[in-house]
Length: 265
Image (cartoon, rainbow, N blue to C red):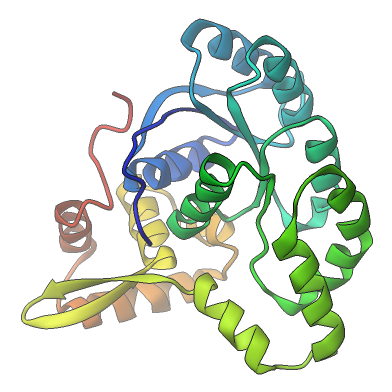
């Protein structure tokens, strides 16, 4: 999970407070700055006009105006502002709408440090529309349905490549899919108590959620896992790091730079 060398100014738009704080933690973990939060589409447009952010991370479904409509208006005012839509897998068809309105990318929730870094690299360094594909087999049917339309609008080499793999693999495990999955499970290596420990995106999201005092049910919902899995994951992480409680977990992740006390700068 390489962090970007350049720092960008973000506005995050989401009507769910828990998601706002989670996404802010991810943005700061990528070494960027969150300057404002918006709770609806109209508020986002006003903040974009006032602050001229480098990047907007905007949920698709919001009150007063949805994310695509709000960002398409912002693009007319500020064409260089990078606009990234976030949403759930069930709304994959909106990738096409995002590209059609000349937005810059589409990330499926839950967002992770690795996903955001991949997205920014393709948008900023390669000047390409980015579609987040987590390389799960159940994505492939929907990918096939939208790939032709999306390819007309942008250079989506990865999208075409994955569609072809889906047809070749016939929804079974294959060396090609295993290779792609390496990206989906990217991790950092930290030295702790004389041992090298793997810290992945889910660990970061989990501890960030704990830091922001989210309830067990909200953590499970944010990470798309069961409440029992939340408990098991926390227990396993504590065991691997040889810590006794969640406060020590938060302290360690803070020391490693994954959690910052002040999100708004």
